[in-house]
Image (cartoon, rainbow, N blue to C red; front, side):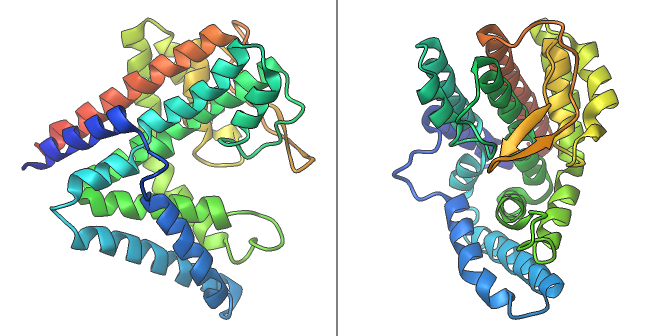
Length: 298
């Protein structure tokens, strides 16, 4: 079976099944490994321990996948992609909003974002949901596919391990400022190209769907670098520009305010129709990314 066929089969499984909760997921396994190894690595000087943890987790993750190839290639591609699951989790929030149940929407939103959600009103819930979909275009779809093209399923595993390390250790608080430095910096490097590739794919998707492709490029160029992360602002600004909305602004994390620069311009209010556009861009961008990788892996 060719690499292109494996890709299409893996994508088909992701779209059909998503990430069933009853099925052991490799990212949860990576998280388990991080939790077990962190105390051991903390016996070293903190900066060194963080590097050792990163090398060990990424190496083991890629190595385990490499040892199972080609037999489980389709399974790894399926489980390392997040198109269907991202859509499903976001739709849970939107369905609650449509039902007028703000409490349920806030609770469901809290499962997919790190910010505080207990006091958010409908526009802020919509903003958080659209931002999550936009940011996840990179680390949940374009990034894994980019590294699949470079290194096969083992490359996907290395990327997802680096992303998981950043999400668990890449904080600037007292506990992780030194120990998590390697996780944060390596994740920045790993996402540098995928984040900017996401902008081009979002713009092309916007062009095909009749949204503002020029706005996607313009605001990604203008606002993409304005966020604390060197990468997350690019796909978010591209989606904001394509849909004609403003993202970013004030969030709270465990009660602590965090003011981020805004992305895009508020040419239209955030609404359920805006989310429908973000959802269309999610699938269009994913399809274009798959097509691009398929074309170079046949």
